[in-house]
Every structure is written in C-alpha cells, then in structure tokens.
Length: 430
Image (cartoon, rainbow, N blue to C red; front, top):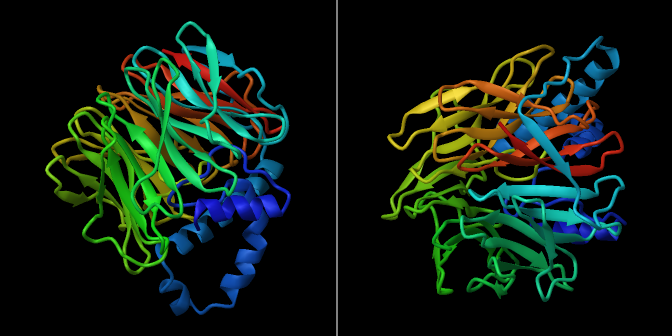
C-alpha cells in the first residue's frame, strides 16, 4: 500500500500516524497484527491450502506475524517470570523538547554519525512529526522542511552532519529534503515521482539513495547526487505493475546500493547493486527466498544496512517451529554469509532484525522475543552479542528497546517504549 494512502486512511479514521511509516513496503505493527489476527484467521480458514500457497510471500509473512503476535500475548499472560532485563555499557536517555507523551508519541532516533550526532524525528502532542539533530554534547536542534504540513521525517545522517529524509505537504504527498549541518534545507523531487518520494540513506559524499512512486504506483529507486542530479534505476527482475518495482535502502561511499525489489508475482527479494550497475540477489544459505531483508515486525518496511566496505546486515525468513523464524545475517563483501539469532531463550519464537552495520562489521538491531517484548542488541565482528535493554524500558508486549543506528566507534542510537507506550530516545556507549 502506498504510504500517502495509508496516512489519508488513518487520518480519516481519526488516527494520526506516529513514528515513521515505510516508504516502499508498508508492514503493520504488532499491535495492528494482534488486533487483526482473528479477522486474518477467519479469512484464511475460508481459503484452500492450494489457494494460500499461491499467495505472494508477503501474505504468508503476515499470517505468521499475526499468529506470533497472538501467541506472544498469551505467553505474557500465562508465563511465570520473564528474563531479567540486561543492562550493559552506558545509556543516556533523552527526549526532544516538545515531544508528546501520549500513546505512540515521543522521540524516535534513527541514525548516528561518527561525530556522535544523532538524527531522527519526534511527534508532538498533536502527533505531528518534526526532525531533530542531537550533538554529541547533548544539544538538540529541531527543524521542519519549509513546505511541510503533516510531518518532517529524518532518515539518515552522514559524517558531515548532512541529514536526508522526507516531509508531507498539505495533500499528504511526500517530498525529499537534504539538510546541511548549518541548517540549510533543500527540498527535491525525482522526475515522475507523482505519488511520493522517500529518501532512505546518504553517503559521506552527499549521495542520497531512496525510492519514489510513479503515476502507476510502480516503485522506482533513485540516487541523488550532491549537485542535485538524480539517476533512476530498476532491478532487472523487478515487476512493473502496481506496488511492484525497486526500493533503495542504503548507499555507501563506493557507490554500492542495497535494497529490495518486488517481482511480477509480487514476491519480494533483496539486492545489492554494485557501483558498476551489476545487480546481485541476496540469498542466505538457509533462506527459502522469502523476502530477505525486506520485512520487519515492529518497524514498518525493510530492515537492511550496508557499510563502507559493502558488507550488508539484514534478516531472512527460515521456515520451521510454529511460525517460522526471522534470523539475522551479515553478508561480507566477498559474498560469504554469517547467519545468527540475537537470542534463543524460551518461549518460541525469537525474531531477529539487524538495522545498521558499521565499518568494522558490528551490527545493531533488535529482536522480538516469545513474549512480544523488544530488545536491542549489538553483535560484534567476532559474533559476540550484547543485549541492550534501556533502564526505563517497559517489559510489556509491544514495548521494550529498539537499537537503530551504530557509528564508527560502536555508539548506538535508538529508542525505548515505556509502560504508557510513549517513546524516548537513547544513546548507548559500550
């Protein structure tokens, strides 16, 4: 579903979107999945197994996710003591001034650069999003794109402190922006991005990678260079129908791009596009090909990152157990895969989602456990995993800690969810 349509629908229903919606592959949150589990069960029960097997993998994923959400809620109600929260390193918790404190409101850090500057967005008391940057010293500056009406969303930051993201205008149409460290903002659109544009990453040369929708709602990937020139590209295996196409999720200094594509059968795959334009479809060894890197659970949209050397951190679906499992992987520049689970404790099932990777191959991300509680994690290049639970994070279902970005020195930016389902930012230092 197109994000602009989602926002319009939610607003008509009296719900203002909180946090950041996916630009290319909308995925429902756990709360939505749990609420829809009964309806989904009723619908799927009316289908024959043959019909279900013919559905695109995204539908099968949604079925598994809804079942996990329901089972996790039941586990929380009937289980005894949950695992004790883990605290390692140093947490610095923060809230952007003006952030709302209601359900789904608060502070959402998304990325951190080598200088320790964090960017993201916060939702105010009216659930309207605004961008922010927080320096390593703790100074917070907020900003809005000049023509925004329904929210400004910062997605990524480079070593120079340049931020990219998108905003929504009065018609709920999205437009891209680049904000330099001196606060100057340039707004932009790609050619023929009739139905919205969504920047997702920026390299240290100022090249922005992202996605837009054309007049037929076909997904197109783009690179925007520092001089404003925009190059559009498509994975050769991508479909050209409604909600099919190519999504760029990250770009590195070598010009390599990581992203997702949807084929003509509406199945979703991850890809690496080298600087010479050659595409490689990602296929972890125990994957069935089910949307590696292109699904999430708590966050909407792809969970994928590429570092300066071309290593890619992401996840893939592995069938088995009651719901199947999302496992993490690191694909090295030579094409070798290392797969992992962030944790393995009971009850079933723990799903792992890497979100960022630094130059050393250290990964930050989150996992959702069998109780539907979220925990951040850091996995170093030797495979050692440290679980991150912010001290004030609530251990309730759909709550917990999300580790979002990691920088050169291993510092992590993310958020935690409190008992009232409000969001708060944190910086974690090893």
